[in-house]
Image (cartoon, rainbow, N blue to C red; front, side, top):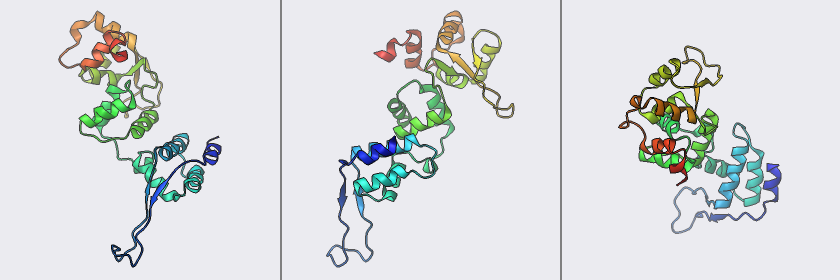
Length: 227
């Protein structure tokens, strides 16, 4: 159990900076709040607590960890927000960011972070991981969503829908409860069916618009990804 792990972890180091006392030469009129330095071990324990209970309003493991490392629980919660673990403080995801997630969902969280950074967006690896998990997006790497495939090909997602309805591209409905007003159910498309479609309908693909690395990886059946 997670609580037991925290309780047994009595060797976690922590470093604190002493507060400036009233009367000291460099003291301001207002007492400054004590600052804490977090080690990699402490950050890892915070991640474990939040990732095991992503929707919990209160996490007793945080208070146990606070007693263990001699850092107040409010400081640990603040650190969790800095690590991108607290949903309530998460900056809303924009449509361009979600498009990047859809296009590069098969990559590692760190590589997705770099893709977002290159596009001008700052997200933590933990934030990316939680967003992908909450969206249940592409949990099986052998599947694509209709929009994710459209983004990778550099086309409008309506074109992908047209291919599916015409019977050229095999796909299956995901089985969500999305209404027609919400855009209807979403498609799941197997990677092998995408490859088959491209080989059977090469003139439908504009190589100037596709994501080049992704396209090579798809056609070579993972060779580029493993390189």
